[in-house]
Every structure is written in C-alpha cells, then in structure tokens.
Length: 250
Image (cartoon, rainbow, N blue to C red; front, side):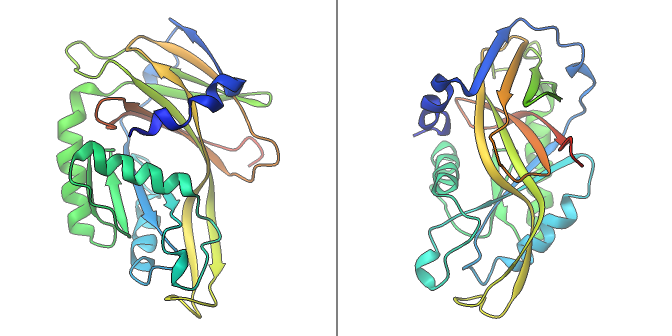
C-alpha cells in the first residue's frame, strides 16, 4: 500500500488543478529543508518528551516539523482529540516502504526515509545526517503562495542524475500550537502542547519529474496557521522537496 493510492478520489473530485511545464523561477529560491514527521498520541505516556523535542526543531528555519496524531491508542482510555485514522495509514505506508514494518509512538520519520524514537535527540540527529546526505543531490525546489481561496504551488524539475522522477505533491494545513488537557488514560492529569499539528493532508497532484504548477482550494472552515508542501517519491516515499508558508490571516 502507498499513501498516494488512498487519496486520488479526492483529487478526481477537483481538489487540485495542475498545469505542467510551469515556470519554476519562483521555486528556484527555495532552500533545502529537512522534514520531521512525528507520529504521536495523547494516549501514549512516552510521547510528551517527543512532543517537546519536536517543538524545539520547529524553531529551526531549515526544518519542517509536523505532528501527525494517530488514533490506534484510543482504546487505552482517552480518545485523542486531534488524531485521524488516515495518519495511521500514513505511518504504515512509511513502514512498508522501508520494509521494516516498525510502527510505534513516539516515532519520528525523517525526510520520509529513516525513523527514530522521537524523544531521543541523538537518534534524531543521526537520522537527519543520514537522510540529508542520501538526498542531497535529489532535492527539488518547491515554492508556495496564496491566491484568493487557494494555495498555488510550484515544483521544479528533477536534478540531472536523480533517480526520483515520479511522485506526489502533498499539501498539509497545520496549527502552530495546540494545548490539550487530558483527563483519562496514560497521560491523565497532564496538559500537553502539540506543535505544528496537521489538520488536513491533501494531494496537490502527481509529479512526473518536470516542473509543474498546482492549485489547491483551501477547505472551508478549516482551522490552520500555516501550510506545508511535501514532494514525495512514489517508489520510496522519500521527501525530495518541501516548503512552508504561514496563513494569510496571521
């Protein structure tokens, strides 16, 4: 199973329009960013240190840090108020792409390539170093802007010699900070703050290795503080391009 295959129905209903061969000039200025995706749960007593550590990484301009709350610990006595079942599927698709089938919380997936326990800074730094080196020559510039009620995205062409020439561009709407008081389960009595919580993840469209422009309508009544774009290889799920912008209302 791959993550893109589960969402093309949304795309076919008109979530995005694509114009191939767009001018990538604006995107060429986008600098390389490392992407950290933390799979966390309000029902997991091991997660708060990882949630705190992700908040520190989110302050770095060269890092895109996102929280993906999962729902599979809801049976422990507290239903996660931010979780989506689709984030369980996203975490599972990474494990299947890596071939190790390791799924746990707090799990930090780095650049869509390697994983680490999200509370262990040393392991996270090692994963950053390994994945950054492996993907350094395959980075694709991505840029974003708002246009009325839509987000416009530009993805550049694959660098010469890059093995990654097909993928999917994803758009994540996120809230900067969400504090949740928890009154049952493993974290009973705690108040935990979550950073860059993904509220909705949508496919902007497929990418075929050539420069392209995308237009995605912003969902109505969606609470969000910023948007993030992730360009991912269909073959490996590795993140080969990323960008972020704040909400136009901030």
